[in-house]
Image 1: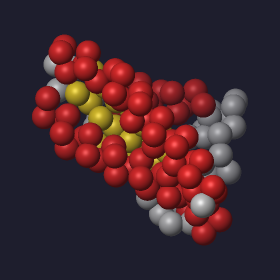
Image 2 (image 1 turned 135 degrees about the vertical axis):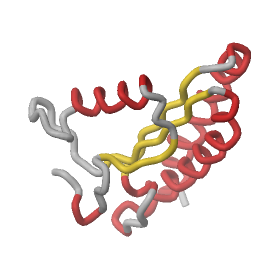
Image 3 (image 1 turned 180 degrees about the vertical axis):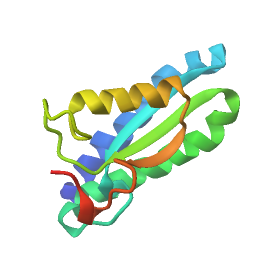
Image 4 (image 1 turned 180 degrees about the horizontal axis):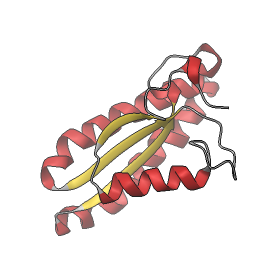
Length: 128
């Protein structure tokens, strides 16, 4: 049980606490952005990541509810599930600078909702 509880508290409860602290100001302004990154275990069950997958799936559900509730109110809610191992200096989709550019594009173009990154990646096609 501890194997599932710690990741759930670390990912889901922490996200709820952060959202609860920033959301009132966003709602008062009528805008803002909540940007979430998970791994592919949020989208695909993976036995080797079972405990993390429980937390990622829970976080994904929370994000979906936030999106439904807040997007009509002008608050951007976006979620990207990364299917890669980050490697600095590659210039590829797994380079942290490229991932930062992806997030900037999501924010600046208001590309809300959920998507895997890179687009179309699955557990079988992860980028290492």
